[in-house]
Image (cartoon, rainbow, N blue to C red; front, top):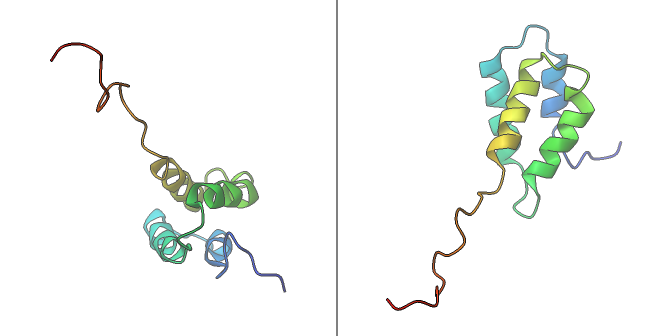
Length: 92
């Protein structure tokens, strides 16, 4: 059996198999999954892989919503403005 780098414990896969699973239960499973993500891994890439694998076929599943929210929350912060900390060339 090949180890799944995106879901090594099979938590997400099993969540999609549980009949009647709730959003809150999916969030709990997601937290367990997230705690197991190695520091060197890119969580956004892993979430995109899991969504492609499971979410596309189950768009209304609560785990799809949780994975989507996790992916969106894991987005890198965007820098606002472009001059903070830079010399603007003016007197000051």
